[in-house]
Length: 590
Image: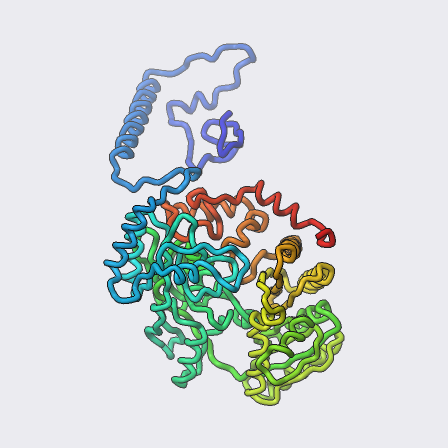
């Protein structure tokens, strides 16, 4: 009897529970085969020694060889000049305040140009906090502005030398606290100066760029150069490519083009926590050579490396138009979406379908930039794509019939490309419009995603919670792929407490429906407490092991995604169970 990973096993020769142990063939040597085949002795009798001289010689050689191998292995292990790593349970050993001061001095020497390094208090606070999320921010110790991969390598090597944590930073539009500083002090690496489009390969439909460039800038550049291609991943208007990769984002186009975790990023150049630079693969459209390391960094939120160059895939531009329609409630609207996207010959022509609630439509009429006035009811925004105006109108006609079958009214198709652009802009500015609807309030923006067939139930029950809680809010969502967002608005601590419960119940429902705690916002510090429940302890443990292997010093964005002991942070099952019990609390008791 012995234990493996804490579980008891019975050893039969070299087999564990009747199966070969570790795939090793354990067939006995010829001289010992007779022992293995001896009939069982009667109970209570002693075994007979039947070994011959050649058997004894064989055992002596085997024992000597084993002992020599063990001694040699130990000697090699003791003499190898390899970097030391902590045990998984040991805390990080970051530098002292004096170390960090010296690190900042060396950063100024490494980036001597004006504006390359900043310790201005206002700058440190701005980079450590965000108006886009409710999480408490933490100021950084220093902000650096690299202009090249070489600059990033210099920064990372200094961070290693003085054991100073590093937090990558892009356009700061993330919603789960991904760019907050580390409380013990850290270097904020702002990639805004690395915002160049390096190469455009029109014939290959791809583009090479730096991480600080925005997706909208890329599409505007392609349009201005008359290149009939575009990059279809479209999160918030200000998002940059590096942040989009790091959060595994998507956007309104996800129903047709998928997410950042699809094949839209062909390769990445990454500076690892050691300062080593790698390129995840070549520029070919596909590759089956080895592990898909590109995807390892998509959604890693800067915990595994700093992205300094990207090759992204482009799609052909097709004619589009926009339509809106209103419904009695969000449940009916979500059901219409489910039916429309599953219609043969129609679903592929729906580029986007966005769910909005009556509160959003009311805010849009007051604070939107469009001159158009909408019915203040739950509704949908559709974007259709096709090869001609006739095909667009035909798809719109079929979708209109589906909507009307589910109680939809006021179906409106844009009369021109200008009107279509204005209507779509109204939906894309949902966050700012929502914040404007409750002046002086802060916003808790959260998202979940479920299988599309489960979306009507999830949205309907969440809407009921929001009504009972009487908390100002808007609901919007990428209904075509089961992803929707709630913006919960609050001014007081009491309102924040209610928002926490509503958001927790929304996540709990999504997980119960075989969904995810976040469809596109990422994990950061806000959603990591749900990872064990969603993915399972084994999966989260593997993520932590990958983190410890690539970043043994725990320097890169500590405390984000899956916390490890190298971050000095905990997301234990006990904490998670306490949180889960809080989420089931009746909102009417607040």
